[in-house]
Image (cartoon, rainbow, N blue to C red):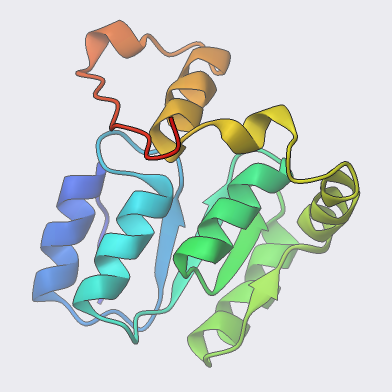
Length: 149
């Protein structure tokens, strides 16, 4: 079965009803998204295989997705790589788009204290929305308390 959702809440509702072989997830969908959505999905079904479609080639999105439990991450503009990733992730293997690996390696070389690493997941999501021209004022934006502040 194939399904489609327009926001994180719909993804969660569908995942409760349908056992997916593979879930392809856009990290920037409205509502619950990104690492928080991945964590919630895996908390309900720890065997779920999640392949993240990344709109950015930045390492922070890939790192956050993989640290949250995604099995793979592919740049959304790389059709051929996506076709390689799907069977691997569906078979229980991990996969990261080679172009994203390069970004991860070179961003990591600059150290964990890079500016984007100090943002919470939600703060990073709002920043990405602003950078892509979306108006976060049209949506309810809620920041959670940071434990390290």
